[in-house]
Image (cartoon, rainbow over all chains, first blue to last red; front, side, top):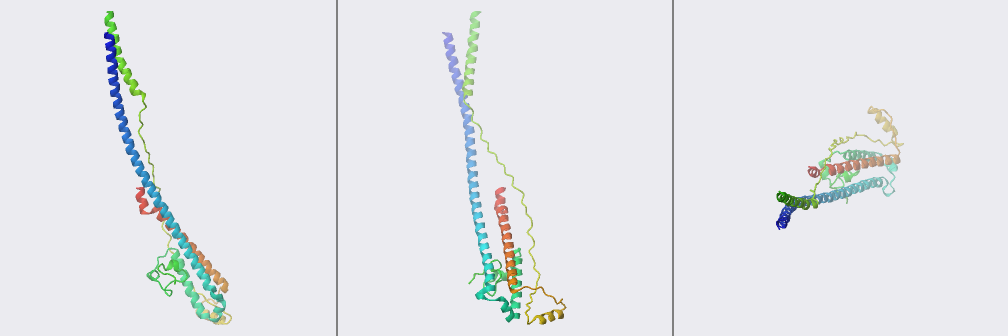
Length: 155
Length: 132
C-alpha cells in the first residue's frame, strides 16, 4: 500500500517538475522567437531600404543614359550643320574663296577660332558669361552651340 | 533490516524517477536556434584622380592663296619677316580637316561627360552617406 502511494507521489512530483521545466523551456524559446522576430523585422526594413536604393540607382542610370543620348544627338547635329555649311545649296567653297578671298579668309579664321574654343570647352574649360547668356544667332558659337551655348534655342 | 533496505530502494526510485522524467521531457524537443544576420560591407576607396587641365588652344591664322593673290601673299609674308612658305590644303581637304576636328571634339566631349557621369554615380554625396 505504502509502495503504491510512494509510486504515485513519485509520478505526480515528476510530472510537476517536468511540467515546470517544460514551461521554463517554453519561456526561453519564446524569448528567442521574439528576438528572432525583431531581427526579421529589421532585416525586412533593411531589404526595403535596399530595394528603394536599387530603384534610385536604376532611375539615375536611366537619367544618365538619356542625358548621354541627348548629348550624342546634339553633337551629331553640330557635325551635320558643319557639313551643311560647306555644301549649302551646292555651294562651292573653293570658288567662293577665289571670288571673295579676303571675306572667306576672315570667315575661315573666325571659324577656326570658334572651333578651337569648342575643343577647349570639350576638354573641360568652363563657359564664359557671354557664352552662357547667348540666345541670339549672332551671339552663339556656330561651330558647337550645343556645348558652348546652353541657353540657345535654334530658331 | 530487510524492511529498511526495501524503503531505501523505494526512496531512491522516488528521487530518481522524477529526475529521469524531467530529463526526458526537457531533452526531447529540439531547441530554437538564435537567428544570426551577417553584414559585411567594406566600401572601396575612392579613386579621386584630378580632372585633366582644360586645353588652351594656340591661335592659328589661315591664309587663302589663289593663283591671283599668291605673289601678294608671299610678299606680305616676307615683309612681316615670316618664311615665305605655306603648307596647303585644297578646299575639300580643308572641309575634311574641319570635320575631323569636329569629330575629335565630339569624342572628347562624350568621354569627359561619361567620366563625369561615372563619378557622379559612384561618388555622389548620397552614395557616401549610404555607405556610412
